[in-house]
Image 1 (cartoon, one colour):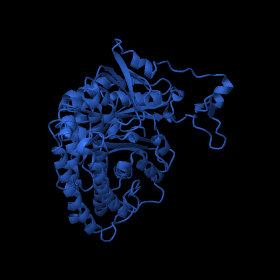
Image 2 (cartoon, one colour):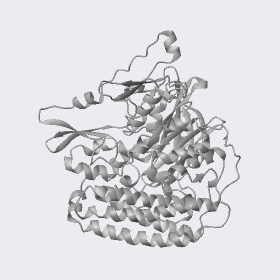
Image 3 (cartoon, one colour):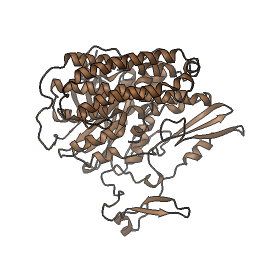
Image 4 (cartoon, one colour):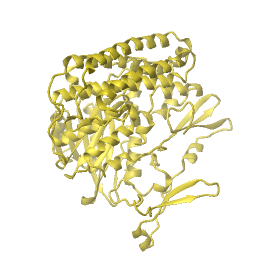
Length: 569
């Protein structure tokens, strides 16, 4: 199996003079800055010759002091090796433009659109640079640039203008900056077709119509707009519009100290707050060069696996209520089982949902007295109940007809679309960060990566139920193996990492969660980029729904286990 040094040597040999800077962080992590004119060729070489078939995402960085913009492309592999390459390209800040990777990786679409609307970075060759997360008033203001002045003054509210129309509805718009007012400059709205115009362009006959599912709808698992162009009962094309609960967490974290930032990771997706804590703290620990004590590592694993169990119980139970028949009843029981799991988490962290428990260099506190005995009782109950749920849905004919063979995704399509987590593993791709990029105490634990070959909606639910059983097994091992010792490394009260950057991945309940953190040496991160798992999966909805029956939208969309809050972070 190659190492990061081997990949660097291959790049330098194939593209002499094009690798401007490089850093081998470890055997599995490589950072390279390349000539942007060679970006497409280098990405294609890595994909076709070095096995980097997984485009994991990208991040924009405003290097205002250097008058540059930076794009960081994250590439990995599904099966060939466990190396992650961070490819960086620099472009002038006054007219930033880099080649689009959409011709090579379909799922680069959303990542590039986000960098365009947030930073104003153009991606040459991108097929649809339209707004993704922002409202029209902010498009063209590039709100994640360091010199953006569109946020309201905390004392006067000068920049945000409130407007009440004749019907009593309130809207807000961003006013001009003082510099724009003084110079008489009025920003021109960037021209692009509206979401509705893009939809209606696909209507070809009077028999076709567009149905709006959301942003609030009984069969849509979250506040997002899913529009479908139907011809009879079949979906001809699907359209997604997100950004309805955009919270601006990444930008907020750049204006908070490192420690204060942990609180915001909880709020991205409350069903994965422990995993989000872990991913952020792990990235900062790499900047600090700190390794948590062994006992703290085990506690972090226990908390993460408890979080995975409660997330799968709630997500599966809620989804089953949509399908009817006997599958309605499990929600009532799963939510009760989940309460026992949450009580265990509460005994550790002091909170039931948003924990803010993981700390740089360890955890906030040790396990409480008697935790191991109580945890073993709850794990025994969870194992028995989960087996009952598996038997129940296996015997339900309505469930089987609505799920078996519905929304099938082949292994190759799953990888090409950039799926992650249970939806990917349900398509015969056993890709799990706990194995691919092991952290904490996971290398010392025995567990299986759950996968299925069918790739249908039923397989995606089966994977989650079996993952609950596997998480129980992991927790029981941790309780048997956890050593005595400290739970926190000694660190300064004010966290100020040396200038640098780090990327850290973990497996949260929905898949690959990554944090890219840049330090400028101050007590606040210069840049925080979240690579969320459902953001990656969500993008796949539109191609997956084409050609299916309208009634199957519930099974396909619901089996993905949405967390729109993480998408709209």
